Image (tube, rainbow, N blue to C red; front, top):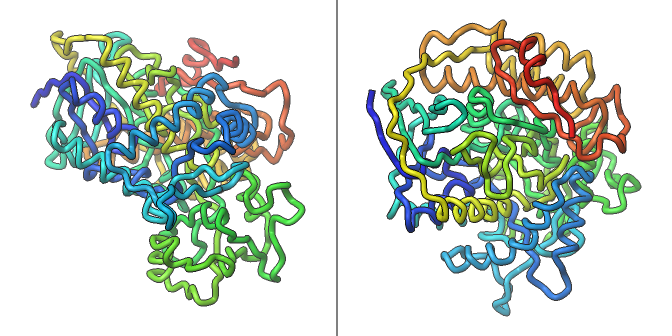
Length: 516
């Protein structure tokens, strides 16, 4: 078994992981592992921009309250304040690194408005390729200073009691590699691929969440999966995202009879929070279209979306794009503090896999890239000021025991869409929990990328269904048809999960379900 040592190990190569690696590699030995190629992530696919207050007309308090309202007052207010206050500095840092944000003809940076934002404060790059521009800029830098292991999949953390000392990794050849690290940063993204329709990269299968859970880390708010309102609704096997910025530029949602879908449903109309718009589209019995007729030079303003439309046979001359909701962003995750520290010593979490609490029950548009870069800096600064040696102790060669669900991946996705999707009931959630109960799963026979993903997807689906079952109210992205009201006593209550998957009953007695 090959062994590798590094001061800092980063698992994942989205914006949060790459930014942390960029900052730390100036002074530390940093290794990045990614199960596909470097930069393949949701961050790279991000069409929307990055939100930051940079004008006299705006203020951090405006951005703060927009974020809190979109999050349905479920946010960690202290860290939300930190997010919006430090955003402008981090945007300037990206510019200094070479990120080319879009400018007007007069040379000023363009600032756009998106859903639930009260003012125009969104920076874009390449029209609708902001994530790609940021990722490529960071990749060019980390390649010069970091050790990069592509096509390497993290299996499980190395644990010395409750201290994380690295990770076991599988490569495409089937070899297991032990990577020991003083600090390990988990930045694997969310879990959008648990659903049949999603904006997420194919690699986003909940791996980091499952690893953290098996290691005993504390997770929370897994019931809050945000569904983006405007995914392409054609007949293609794979849909694609149509950025919220399209509605920010004047696009409107139209029913099949030509009526304005959002008229009378919310004071912000087409720019209402995502959960409101997505549910309105789902509740409409007839097809819904995005009318782009008022957007001047749509193909130039949104080149990535236009390219996808043409690829899927959408006639942009008609200025109507069929849309439907799809799984987009997980607000829950591994609980961290402001420095990205988890409940396990030596393990940090950043980006979508983490739960800082800044998104509440429903993420505000263009706050995800912002979260990634802000908290990557917080984590990097903490690590740079705290020295720890790479552990030298012998590794406990514990057996890798992962369990696969009894259903196929396509069947799993359909179950999640039907019972843990946008409309949930106790009956459907109870069925899903019993179907995916970890102690009823089979041990995987062959360790490869596909079997590990399958095990992780089954476990995280079970966790999400269990969390959704326990939250007996409706709030933001979590809607219970049998508990449709938003309850004041549930405001900012988080369902914490720190249990071992092997025995549900014992785990309830050991750590219980904690509310605060």
